[in-house]
Amino acid sequence: MKADWQWSGEWWVSTDAVLTGAWRLPRERRLALFFANVSEQPVAATWRFDSKAYDIRARKLRFTLTEDGDTNPQTRELTSPFEQRIEFKPRSVQVWELGR
Image (cartoon, rainbow, N blue to C red):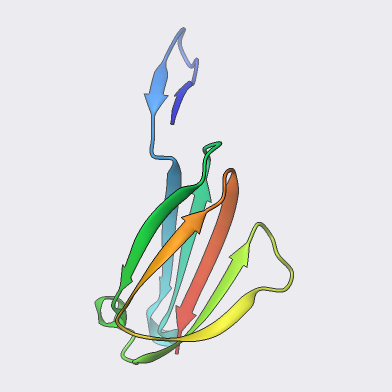
């Protein structure tokens, strides 16, 4: 993505189309991942995840996906490690929560 932030005249800034963040609760062994696709196009990626990297010592994980403020998020069980193809819709937000 490229935009003119106009803080002092013309100031062009480039950034990834999908902006990300993460929050971990080590004592609860939970992880939240945040994704915002700020572009006008869908973006696809492959997600490779191993719970050991986040000190979540469990093979079976509860995975909850919330999209764009959905009031009825999808929850399912995943087995770690895994690899999965994902797609971010244009101008959308997703929150993923993983835990035991």
